[in-house]
Structures are given as C-alpha cells and as structure tokens.
Image 1: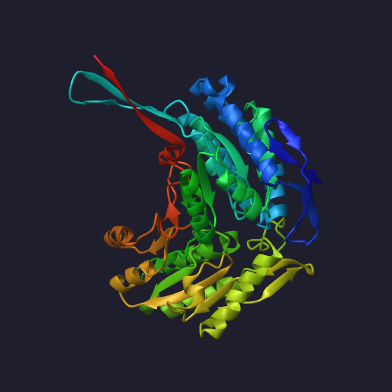
Image 2: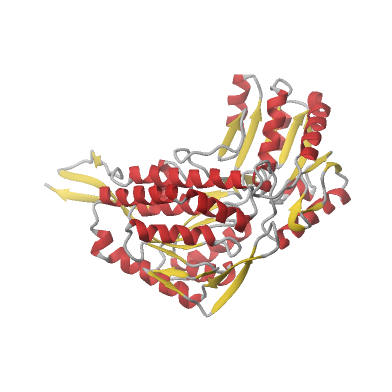
Length: 475
C-alpha cells in the first residue's frame, strides 16, 4: 500500500517516502509520502487560494453545513474500513477504533449544525449609531494532531474550522497518518472545494515546523506534548499567529472511602488502561483514601493481571499494542525508574508479545508512589498507574493539584456535596464524577496550566476559528 499527499484536489507524490509498521505484528503496513517544506508550502497556498475563492468565501453557510453532513455520511458508510485501518496503524483494539470513528462522525454532524448559526450581536452603544458584530473565519488553519487518536483528534479541529469557513492544512502524526488521509479522500468525495482540506503527513521537526512558521497560516491548532506546545508558542510569535494548545496531562483519579468501591475500581481501570494509557487525560495518578487503600489496590492489581495484551482484532482484547517500538521503550524506561525510586510494583511491569510479535506492555500498577517520583510527576503515555494515599478531603485535593498539568480529573464519592466541592477545587479543564473518559462533541475539552489553553469541542471550539469584527454605522 502506497499513499500520497492531498494538496488541493490532487494526490501528489513526494521526494521522500517512509515505511509504517503495524505495531501489533511488526510487519510493514504502508509506504507514505513524506511532506517537506516545499510540499507544506504548496498545501498552504492551496488552502489560501480556496479561502479567497468564491467557491468557498461566498458559499452560503447552510450549504457549508450540508457539505459537513455529507462528510459524516461518508465516514459512516466506510466506518468498518476506517476502524480497521486505525487499528492496524495505531495498535488499539478494534472495539476502541469503532468508538473513535463513531465519535468522529458525530463531531462532523455537530459542527455541520453550527455552520449557519455563527451570529454576531447588535450593541447598545452611546450616540446616534447602529453598531453590531460579525464573526468571520480566522483564515488558513494549520492542524497538527498526535498518534493516540489519529482520526478523532483530527476531526476535533477540522470540523469546527470548516464550519467556521476556514480552510485547513492537516498534519497528522508521522506514525499514524492513514485515517487522516482517508478523511481527506472523503472530503473530496463529499464535494468540498479543492484546498478546503489538505493532508500532509511528515515529521514534526520538518513538516510541522514548516506549517507553524509559514506566513500564510493564520492559526495553529495543536494537540501533543507540552514541550512541542511551548516551541509552537515561541515560533508562532514571529508571525503573530493565533494558537490553541491541548497538551500533556497527569490526571488525578480520586477514590473517596464513601464511594461505590466496585464502580470506582472499574473506573480506575478504564481511566488508565483504555487506549493503552496513550490518552492525554488518562487517570494515571490514582489517589485513594487511606481507609480503603488496601482493598482498592488488591482489587485493581487483580484486574490488571487479568487484562492481558492481545491481538487488537480479537473481540475480547482490551489492551492493544503500544504505537511504536520507541514508545514501548519509553514506557518500559519509566517502569524501571519507578522501581528504582522505591514504588512497589503490584501488577505488570514487563514487555509482552502476542503470537511472538508486537510492541506490547503489560497493564502495570505501582503502589506506594509519592510526589517527586518521575512516574508520578511526568506523563508516561502508556498503561502505567501510580497509586498514592491521602488522609482526608483537603489532602486529596492538595495532592490532585500538585502537578504542572491540569487537563482532567476523576472523583468517586456517594456524597453529592463533596463531589461538587472537590470538582470546583480541582484545577483541571474536565472533571468526571463517578465516571471517567467520556466525551461528547457538545462538551468542551481542554486544559489548565501546562496542559494548554483553548478548547476543543462544544460551541466554545468555534471561537478558535473566528475573528470578531465590530461595525459602527453613523445614523
């Protein structure tokens, strides 16, 4: 299988190609055209040309919405194929890929409905004036997305940007470009004009950097590591680009003694092991009230031991392959560091193979973890859980907030007043109470502190892709 770059309406080859590896089988998956600076420049110019053309600029908002509904319809028609491609490319279980594709479809439908509802206001100003505001597209958007949810996170940026009337250059992760390329194919089939969506796989250091630095790009929408987000902020300053960043996380999942412990343990398992722990909002710090600590750790360790890595295409598999050999090595390095720093390994901790192949890591649980340990403070992006203990509500909140990050958090309690009180006290963009890892296109998602700024999803995401213009008319 060979893939090319989508630039305008053309599928173009590139001077370089690279080989994708199926992380579950270690076998070659595809040869992918690798965008360099010249290809990114061509894609940006195609996006700018489309933005300035009558075909897009003067297209009625309702018709723009109809095009997005058509994209959703085509995604749904090809959902089985797309989910299978996602699993081969990323290594996640097929049932998770099916959930991802369903979310992508609903994201396009949600923003299709918003396309003709981006209204301004009339303003009660002093003097003899009629004054109103307009919301206009910000321009050409550079969307840079990671490898953990390749299609989903692409749609979180592409759908609202197109709904707002922007055009997009999508730079998928170097490791997982295949479903982004399928999205580009579907966008053309749906009738989007050439250049409305361009797809240019390539390394972040070359293709991503070229996109961030390009003077014709008006906006960067990025999901990825905090370190790269900081670099983007510095580089974007040179051309005063607007930026939204959804960055790293080290999210606390707090179990109080008054919670439904069986549900809380299941929620803790889902919070860290869903998506192999390769989730920005993974509940990787489990904070347990001391009186129930031993019970929770024993149950969780047993569940982790039963959660064996498996073939991502098997119906029963709930722990797939790590996305790459490099990421597997990173995860194993953190596990070794956790043991050296004195945390107690109660489950997992080793690399694994399925049918003799694959970049797998066992579901891993550390007890006796403490702030200051790398496994507690740093984002691992793998199936590794650190358990910490607290004495009371105030200490639990203090531990939860003792992090550079503030992306998400979980709370498990039967006390409704406590749930609301703690939710308000935690410095995080999303707080789940008696659940974890749920998302909806209508619910905004983003972080505090080093987890970034701006929001994906919801009505609020549309603010990322519009400029506000004020018009004064003298009467």
